[in-house]
Length: 312
Length: 312
Image 1 (tube, chains in turn brown, yellow):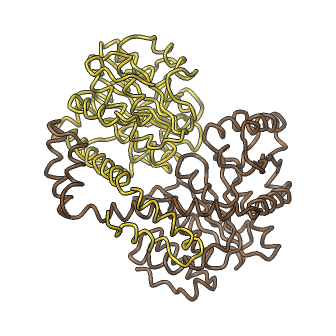
Image 2 (cartoon, rainbow over the protein chains, first blue to last red; image 1 turned 90 degrees about the vertical axis):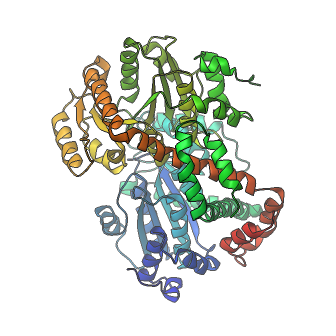
Image 3 (cartoon, rainbow over the protein chains, first blue to last red; image 1 turned 45 degrees about the horizontal axis):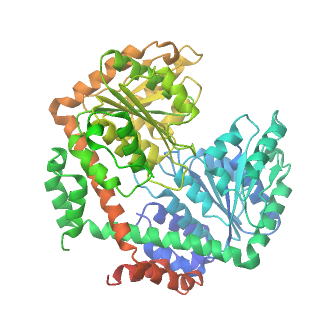
């Protein structure tokens, strides 16, 4: 049984308290909403950076390099690495250990891997909640890293203030990225492993695609990078700063965050409605009438209507 | 403007009527529920086969080969090919034309591609609704083909009576599949391109993974195949038949379909609740209070509670 969360510790950045709070949220523990309520007033200070892209693009290496550079600037960093294709989660796995050593285990960095393949859903919601915990715990920069393969993964990246899409020169990668909706969410692109063949063509292809975008006042560029050697990382950091300054102008960051918060409140409402709706009476009605639906004497739409109209 | 759906034509398998109905569902047209209500009583006869697996495994080739074989048996075939990474949908694209020529355009086969990257969500729901239309239109076999990359894609494959996971010998592919949750949903596996190096090791690795599964009465096997040459397709067809017979025993198929229908009714309810909930009064309350949430003087959980408690 996990113990209760030490809120004072959490807000002071205590590792164990932070880890315990995130675990409680991930496992949908009974005190999950209490934790979220406790941390919420202390959120909004940390800057959230999304790092996404296809598998194998070097997102983790990029994330680690960014974290290391921010640490050198004296900033506290939190990383939520979401792997929707992994059945594992928590902190005791190989992936995490590799990560830890790469950013040189340091009290100023907190790294958490989250995975979706368990029985519990809502990964994108939980990733954002974990980011809230890190934010409240005093992290200046929170990196949300996720492979860009499905809608919920895009939602995670989209929950960031600045979203970076990492690609590699391999043929078709930029086209795939466009198809996967990554082009729409990118604030800028990083072409990683840019010493490989095809880098220039890839940049050209991406520029052509970007040409179709029309962002008022912000021109999403492409930065060449070799993350494994640290090349180009300074440009990435600089572009994050530039984008941050851009957002802070004309209230854009506040507008972006308000729009995200609106979506989030709608999600919370939907979740509460669902939980409250399925009381014993309705669950019983569903069980008793589903046979008629299977036999096609009742449509699922009429049964849904009956369930909704059933007095509570 | 799309015209009204010709229900008599639809139920008789008329191509234009079927295409129009699926488009209306895909676009969430005003008559979407009417269409679903009209087709629902005529569904349940077609057998649904899910074909999933990682990108590049040869799912389309496999699907086309299966469709061709079923046609030779005189069965009517419908194919819903879901590409969650494509921004395109509809029937006028290259992918569809390639498909069409491969299965030799024939009135007994209806192929529809669906994509998710538009502004409208709910792809897995729409794919299942499209399968209902094909079912009601008289298709004996409905193939739901989708790349196995995210939860919603797994949901599509999981909406089938028999689900096939297609893999290739490339190193790590079977491990990736396990991680992506494909192992849990597979009724059996097809190792495509099995003339490539590493095929035997891949089979061995998959057998070890399968060993951990424990399905009462059904042993999910691995079939080697070279879909592009038609090799192994007969074994795949035979195994689908075997699995179908297995399900028809002891009411298993009915139980599986009832469980799916239960999930579907819950989805319909959630969607209706959401639509009904957000009336003008509540939308106004959300707009007027979101500023307080942004300023952290109100938590999103309390605002959600206020919204729910607001009298309609």
